[in-house]
Length: 66
Image 1 (cartoon, rainbow, N blue to C red):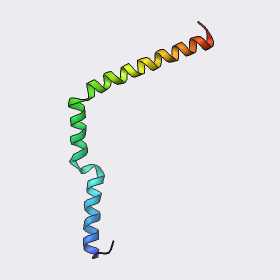
Image 2 (image 1 turned 60 degrees about the horizontal axis):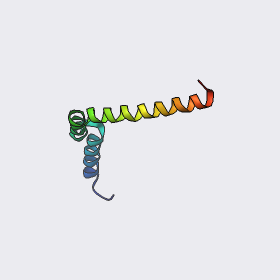
Image 3 (image 1 turned 90 degrees about the vertical axis):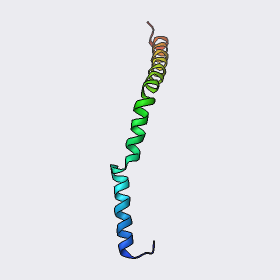
Image 4 (image 1 turned 45 degrees about the vertical axis):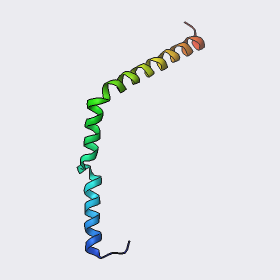
């Protein structure tokens, strides 16, 4: 990038603030997820893990016996 040093330094500072966790966007996204999607996602995850656990138990029983 070709620009005066002052401008580049200011842009670098702005970029650092955006990516250093000071941006409000990640906080808003986390709030949205926790308020509206966390419970349903947790239920879906639990169901998927339950199926995987059952499949693992079936495989272990078929491989090692009861």
